[in-house]
Image (cartoon, rainbow, N blue to C red; front, side):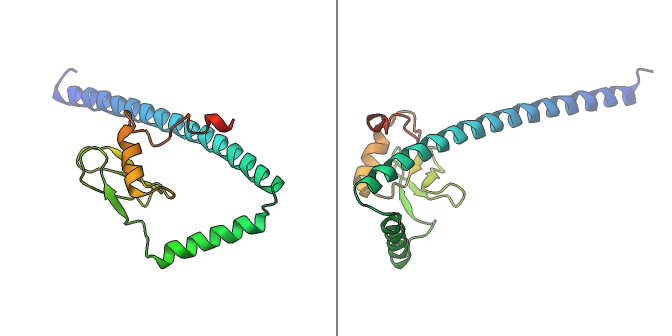
Length: 148
């Protein structure tokens, strides 16, 4: 009744339950991260809508905005930018490549620091501002506080 076979079955069952528990925790964490990202996207969408509204009040039309976006994309393509752009890591200085899965972000393979590929900032300014962030969080929750 309590032979090696029974022990193996119990061990396998416990390991399976443990793995299921770990997977449930990972799923919960992933759902929590997705919810946080949804909140951030909603916040950014509201800010962008407010900015576009102000621009429209000042005479800038959606056609102007769409034309500028097209010009910027054409310029980026003409300069040969791709998702293989690289910058030095703000922490250790090693080369960090932009991730294809997370636009404008990359993670250092050596120290794990998140590097942000700012689209409208000089490379020197980006390195200085990234190095100033203690938590290496690419999303600064207070960056638009003065606009609200």
